[in-house]
Image (tube, rainbow, N blue to C red; front, side, top):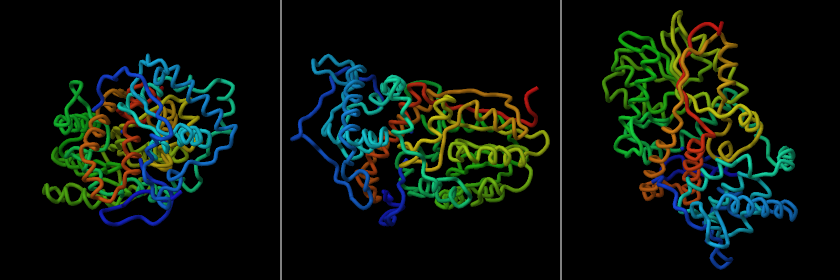
Length: 444
């Protein structure tokens, strides 16, 4: 698979591995439709940069037939398509059903996403369609076929492992795409994690305040104030570090993204806080010193299950006696996590190579093994769905700017699918986001 993205305006990555990858209204209850072959509207895809999107794969007659049956059965049962016109779901239009079936027959849900990237299907409510599918994900494949899952799905590439070198490459493949790309859909705080709202639905103008509410809650959990020695694992673009420094904390913040580090340092300098914030291009495993507080926001998802013991050991090692650790993490059910861990997914292929969303059980297991105990654990998944809705709405509004940065239509459809796919996960309850407080010691 080739590298499908431009890293900065006017500069295209050479061929490599794939990279990619979180206004929703009341779903319109309309019949989905299938257009005939003459209505096929394929997206022009550069065959070198998008080898798996540019043309449908050859899946074999049996796999294609099974996929055709499963797709038709799912769309009919869920009300996403009904020949009678009585469908109760959001509108889904199939421009090239044969290509969709071949892709799903070959690559399952990865093929479903690639079919959207190729323009072979559309929806008037993409997040609505994906939410319906997520709500019924366990019903889409009959039980006998589920037992053959190992024969159907691809395993994660060994090259995506988060060794020190691999982690640096995986982080760069997402976060170093372009600071301007992220600015095109994030709010002015450049916070790339769930906000915390006071009312729904929210307007984009309310997002900075909601992001500060989230950050302040984490800082309060960790008791960050005047003189606190704070370690942040996962800098983002520096908003939490800036906010902690204005409280009087001395912040060391770590990232593997050169693009993030450069912009975070510039923001810190512009705020006159360079004496209080040290932005380091450093792996979390190489963190130095002891700190009164450690905060890590949606970083564990990028670590990979193989390295969760190292992550929690690093957290524990960095903590001074009596210190507190505040985490924000996306979570999924434990059984779903175990299935996903060995599976190459759309997200791992195009968005976050090497990453895995943990379960609450996995967090508890690995944190306790490192000598930590959970003192507080609060979830607010609906807030992430709202955050993603606002990001997706803004991304759509700024598509001309994204195009000007050098990101083609296939990339834009991939990013739109990623944001809608993530939103659907939270709206359906398949995913959650939680803030946790950890301290020294295991549970009694």
